[in-house]
Amino acid sequence: MKIIAVIIISVLTNQFLPAQSKFDIFKLDIPYNILNNKNQYDQMGVSFDYYSDIDPSLIAYYLNYLNRRYLNSITNPDSNGYNLLQSKTRQLIIRRNDWVQQELNDAWENIPTVILAFKVRSFLDYSAVDETQPLALENKKDFIGKNYIDFCILKYFSSDPSLKYSEDIVYGVLIPEAVKKIQDNFYLKFKDISNLSRSERFAIADSVHSYFLFFDKGYGNDLYPKMNIRAYEFLNSLFEEEFNQSFSVGFVYGQSEFAQTTTHSFNFTEQLSDLVSVNFSGDFENKFMYSKYIGLLLKLKIREKIRPYSYVSIGFSKYLDNKVLSATSSVPESAAQYYVIRPDTGIYGYRIDSYYEFRKLSDPSITTYSFQLNIPVFYAFRKLFLEAGLDYTYFNSKFKYSLSRKDEFFIPNVLDPSYLVNYTHTYEYETTRHIFYPTISINYEPWDYITIRSKFRTKIDKLNFEIFLHL
Image (tube, rainbow, N blue to C red; front, side, top):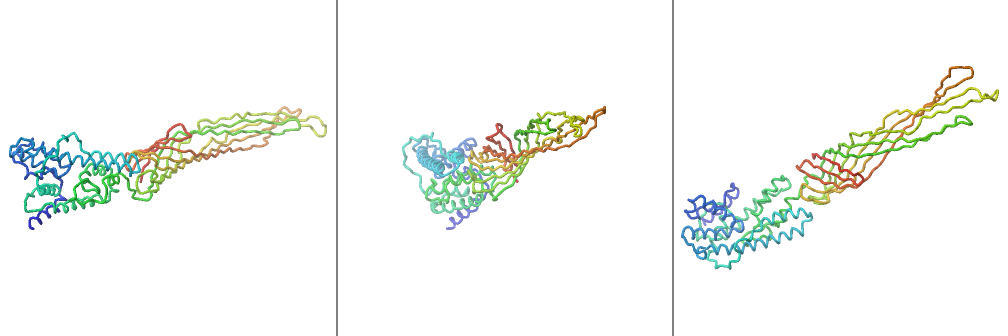
């Protein structure tokens, strides 16, 4: 019992020690002539990692082979355990790859985001073992004792190089406690994966194969307690972004060439006398361009995980550099001449010449605002996704012209005419437009706080560019 207690204490404490080479843990079990040859030791360490990654039970078969081959100098592959090692490796590779394939199938069926499913599958597929090993060997008679296999498994999980094999200890009963401790450490470290950075997530995904034996429906033997999550489910949770808040706010800056043309017709008629009237007309045409804008973005969470339709993005922007490309008028100036009949004589008296003049009082001005509504519809991966939306643009333009009439009086026997400005009229023209158009945008997030968007608007030929800074 004293020896068992020491082993348990060692298992519990070494779960939190810095990681070390697993081959180094077994130095007490490796032939001395290998330890004294660094090149051979390093080469054997690579093979050790290969076998232990497939299944820790292969460690016993590998150590058996090393001792028979290099300590006892047995060269026959049947006698030194090499063929037995390859036979067991073959069986476990098939078992592991069958498990990986089942996880791949279930990931494809149960992960709603297609490209996210591809990402999870890529990490799972990486865990499959290349079957280029000599797998055609027939099953060999197993001459390795189960207790020694359990000892190697326990030593591997406990990472304690001081453990020595004793036939008086039943090592199998100690394995569940060691595995449970690893699982507790796993839960403690990764219980709140929503707060992990992108690099931390990938680091976990790269190393998570170390826990594949322990996942629910994992391929490890019955000695290993199982965690209550499948391997593909855990990988999926690694790459699904947890939203820490129900909404987020950000700033947006964008550029988009957006042109508008306004046309206003002018028609003027005035009766000057019973015989004379003035009538003239024309058009005012203004062309505008607005491109740069700034605004605010509000993102409202709908679903907990990153996936299609997981949030609604609402934006408000104001255009800054509204430009008047051209402002033209086809309204002509006009003049009319008529005579006033004297009522006492019934004959024409003085003559009146009337002149009409248009004058621009202000340059055209425009005001534009934009409202955007977007939702994600497709994720290529965490940082690259498509949004579909609806944009609304409010457009308003104003300008003023004045129309003045000036009369010249020509009185008989008076050489110089006298002047009278009859009136000045001011005309204000205003255009207001409400423009709606569907949009498709490609979004890329190089960092967690910045999004770059290229948006295609169905009524505009050119793409626009936006950059968001998330608070």
